[in-house]
Image (cartoon, rainbow, N blue to C red; front, side, top):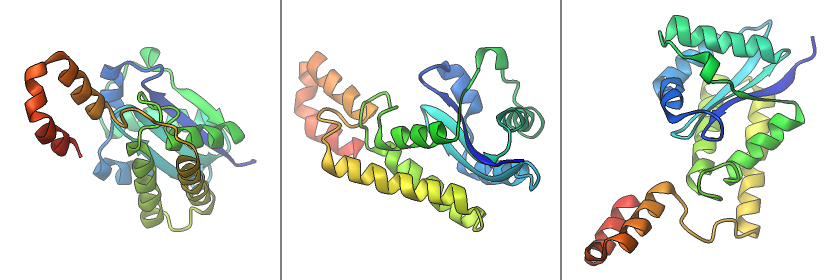
Length: 194
């Protein structure tokens, strides 16, 4: 069977926050989930990106239906979460579309705040986790390596974000506009979000 890069994504674009919260997994859970999902016959390599706005699985596998079914079984059987899958249809990207999607995510083009900076560091963290947990995951590792280089180049060459770079920064700016009395504490608030 031909192996291909498959991205399965639940994000703020199409998945309600309550369901994203149910789908979210901690760093410790990610390691165990990867170990259990890897199947030398079907899912050869796997990386998981879990943030407050998205949970995405990047797999080297032959069949996206198999990967999605394995993920659903993982939530039901290992994580013991009763996900309302009828309300949580993921976006599925295969081949070059999966590569393009990860690049858009890493640059911040898929973020709530266009061009936000935090997502690139989160993608880098996934790559470090991948190197530790699956040293032989050459294809997915190369995907993340190339994506990070591409995102860094784009961020250096193009001013994607000219405004707030995160939701927390936007919240502070909005609060300062609404509540004049907070302006005195502006410096303290801004220091606390960095």
